[in-house]
Image (cartoon, rainbow over all chains, first blue to last red; front, side, top):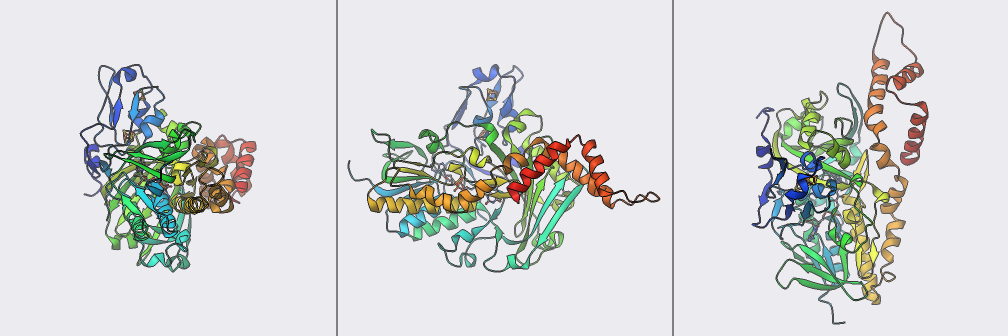
Length: 96
Length: 435
Ligand SMILES: Cc1cc2nc3c(=O)[nH]c(=O)nc-3n(C[C@H](O)[C@H](O)[C@H](O)COP(=O)(O)OP(=O)(O)OC[C@H]3O[C@@H](n4cnc5c(N)ncnc54)[C@H](O)[C@@H]3O)c2cc1C
Ligand code: SF4
Ligand code: SF4
């Protein structure tokens, strides 16, 4: 417990996500392949944009805070198509 | 035109939406309050301090029932460099007694509680429902919303959009000119578990009294700020980060929090506390600079959806601005429905109320503050300069005599690479904003 470094996955597992089978955010890998700035990779608080060895980006929508950071920092037209998840799905912060 | 399903549809059961629904329902209007989360507050996070006095008229003696964690009786403002900390610390016993000042609270608790008042007033709360678009008539006036439920169209005389910082409704209606990354900060937060007695001891408070620490510096190369708040048996520690700056360097948000937690002034306060929840949310940071048009035929926009959050460095208040603007929007909607005129003219009471109250008065007063506080000089040059000045003032360097403060100031200013002209100008801007 005492100040042990937790992994990023452990960090994300502290929040609840009611995952819908349909992705609410879709990233177009073709657009990302030409992107050298990669703002999303640093800025996404859930670390959902992962560069691949062949210069692409893999994106997984499941543990997303629905914050909107990615579509605001990405300035490449068409890279990100962003919607809220269907009602009742997605992140759920807990009551005490 | 056929009769609308309801008088008022409120989109979003955050503080703005629930207060709007309470006011409209109490005035006898039929109200539906739509929320995309499974319960009000489930999607919402913030730093942690509410200033609820605006509720006095709406929920008398709200403090007897509101789900608060601690009453803030101690407020500190901290300036950090890598190795130094300068703190201005204030405490007041008055803030620990009714009617109080600020309180720490969790949003899932707070928003849930406020929405229960909307329901008690007669509003119909529909959760698990995402609004996906606006319904509009041939002239462009808003006539309702489309939801993601089967047969999910809902028509209304007035729609009040309280759908938060990303407000797709305000954007769809064309009320924002554009979305500019530099108008936003990303807030990331860790809720940490720590026994109440340990918190009481570390932060020198007792009973339900608590602490609000606002931090300037401590966010590495990214312009922003930090905060540390006490819950009953939790701490909230987090940072707000200017988006373009964040994206342009190599440190991720959780690493910046980790850096803050390791600072010698913060580490002893959070030591041993275990991560309970990690969360993130955007803040509309730019105040007046980014505010959209808030009134159009058939629709009003309130709260973060209208960028009404006040983010000015040592102030981070959005919940009170959201609650107030939601109330004022509903008052205007009630007037308009009663007059039978929900055109922009019929709804003009909203803008008037915003202008006449703290909502826009505070924003006007502090209009230069967000930019000043997040400027490179305030973020990266002044903390070191100020901390060094204080360090040298209190550093006893015998056998050398004490140097004069003026000389120290001038030397440190030059060492930090700050031009006198800029310092004077920033000082003047700060004085005009905050003074
Ligand atoms: C890190 C951080 C720290 C902060 N600290 C403080 C603080 O200490 N004190 C303070 O007063 N303020 C603080 N704020 C600001 C404050 O959180 C906001 O200003 C406030 O929450 C705005 O309230 P709102 O009702 O306008 O919007 P929100 O609270 O965002 O509520 C919007 C609601 O609408 C719902 N919604 C959105 N879109 C749809 C849709 N299409 N269909 C259905 N429902 C929808 C959402 O689920 C949500 O419930 C902070 C913010 C952040 C991010
Ligand atoms: S999402 Fe945008 S910022 Fe991220 S890699 Fe793709 S194009 Fe670049
Ligand atoms: S919305 Fe926020 S959490 Fe979700 S992918 Fe985008 S940046 Fe990451």
